[in-house]
Length: 495
Image (cartoon, rainbow, N blue to C red; front, side):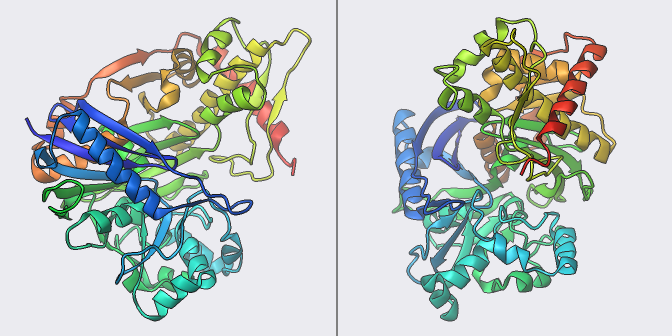
């Protein structure tokens, strides 16, 4: 039996998971890291703390499985995507805290870019100009951090997303690489050439030599050091950004296949094959993945800011529930929402609206409304927001999604998933292995070293844990959506 290790480095924690050849979880370990918030709108991570956490969970998971590093056939890495690290090529020491994808400090840099140039940047990269992406974070560090500026002047500056930082530290030769899915989230990679683009680099003042070499998502990039945490030379053979890894973990290899991850927010991706579909409906055009020498696959991505965190809001701010698990029986205690709609636009609306002026509303209240109706409206808000993104995807691709593949914490809520099937009037499917992000990284690495001979072998392993079919009529679904659209209108122009 061969095993694959997967590092899943996320926004709040780091996991290491070990899978066998059947794609089953053998062991896992997880460790949180500090969220550094220097001022409003700023979010940072300590790169060394992330590295220490990674080493700790690797050691713990290997011990739990009673395995040695040498028992692993390969390592895959998946990561929070746009978060950016700067470090010295000479010392390997971080030059600044990592600036996290949520950080908005670099908005001013983007505001100064000429609108015509902005249009060209979006066309080449597939992404709108937003501080969410890596390029303006790099510009900010070069402008405001003396250590970063000094390293740039001495030509020892290295920039990378978290995958690059981990590979640099885990590999025996300190290799500086990234994959197309992560490079495609920087605003610096040309979607057509899959390489750093001179015009984009110039727009943000980023020196090419500071950036990692762009590789496919599935190949042997290098080997871990025998003197390192694994105690053996193991191929590092998969790198995939987290949402793209979930697409792989859900085995959405072909055009028209999609997955939706339900977490703090929601991320839906649909595979558009080798076609670059330039969105007109507020979706992101992005690189999905590239498996070795195969042609790269592209995707459309729709993101919803507040889904699972709306449940946390009911728990932490409103005190309506004591634990997130309580929302399901509370919402199930009423037959419908009682006319109550909740739009959790706490900091605006993401796809497909992109309205920063929106704010959250609860509408349709009467004396008969109870906390159970609000709980049900909260679950419905998750489903309606997902509906809006999925419909936009279908319109742009001309492909009807026949089965929505789902993963993430919220999918354990059976009532919510039934509501999702009802709202979409589409079947919803959840896999046996819920950790699809780590699994996708494992698949990428395993394919590169021959643990799995081809994609068909992986497809034969996929198992479903639950399946939901619509239980209400299309007329009832349409009526609910009509109320939702009216509620959305009430959120707009608030700020």
